[in-house]
Image (cartoon, rainbow over all chains, first blue to last red; front, side, top):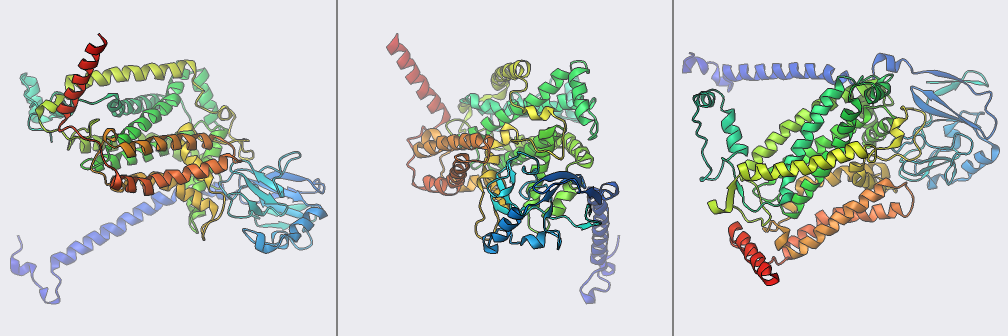
Length: 185
Length: 428
């Protein structure tokens, strides 16, 4: 048993040896616990094999003007739409101030390829697949896409116009390898 | 704790005496649910629902453990393993249907239990902690039920997981990384299914733990009762056993009758046909709806279709939906009336029934597509729901004049008995 005088050794700087040991031990255990918790939380993030599916090549040569196809990237649906001139004109006619998420069609397509509208088919509200990519589906009030889950309407540039979704359909990163082949991712 | 007149536990058999010294579990049971726990003598059948909820949880745990012996939590085989349970496993169809409908029965009795608490003011002092723990149990139940619904990996499972994890993407900046962390990918997939199975197996035992705390907190002041008047002396109470073990036993019998009728004769009525289609990440069902017990909250989520102030519609919907449940944590302090039972609160009683109608309306709207008139009805329903708790309740509890109250539970019981005798002799 330490005597009172031993416990108070070095007390002149206001810190007893036992206080120091206490703080050091608790800090060490705290840092150690965080170091253990981090991998336990991080294991839930997407694993290497999930991340490895991150590029997809698609052939767009068969898509006629006015048509769209549904494909997938990282297991998410992707819409590739060949816009007709009227749809592009409609998208350009909308004043940016009327948009919830203001973006021009030029910002959402590649230069010189503005008829190719490539977006994720994932509603930015809660992630349903909107209708409008296939023949005969409901395209909503603005001629683009319509999400049946909670009623979001997208226009011909896949921009949100009405309903609960906060953002335009996401344009994934992609490049034209040639006039007919696109790499997404 | 208990009342001073509680019957003490006095084991006579040498074995029970030996046990009492080493590990006094029989003493604990005797004092918690036996003759050693005095309970108000006037409890009505609405006081059965706590025990019924406990019975429903036990049914879910037992059927769930058995199902886990046959189910495979892998996205490529999960759907088929459920079909294997339905077609090949001995009595598998019965065990799965019991588990499916058991979840619905659990929510039915819990909703009745919650509305019992709202009507009779069971959330008020000195039982605030009982109520708070109850709301925690309710939240855990919702999480467990949601993850369980994902396991069969049908279309509704998949899109339910997509939509519900989508709630988290509404959080500014960190939302999308949080969602990917929850899913373990960019869409619900094998990683999601595996972790949901793990948590779906874990959470019921967490619920069981919180239920023990709920009962512990309840047994400190003792049960409330339909008059809302606290127990004053011994003649206000009867021992839990045999009086309420018998009454609860009868209630469990009625509960089981309804449960087996649903399971055997109408097992898919409360489910969705779309969930018998295997999950497809490229096609959303035309009309997605959650299980019936989430519908009122789903309607509140869908009610927000416009941006308001600087917050967008999506985040508003998610905030409102979580707030509609979180609000219940503040209930003991929003209602400042010292009178517990609505039997003596003429004004609150009216608003209580309007709230019941409002929740039913929201539930109905939750089922409907996102079109008029359902959108405007959900908006009105959601506004009323919040107004009930945040405006009406605080005002009513200040201005209301309660009806005259009896002096004790016994007086209330005997007065009722006297009028019953009088009306019986008048008709005779």
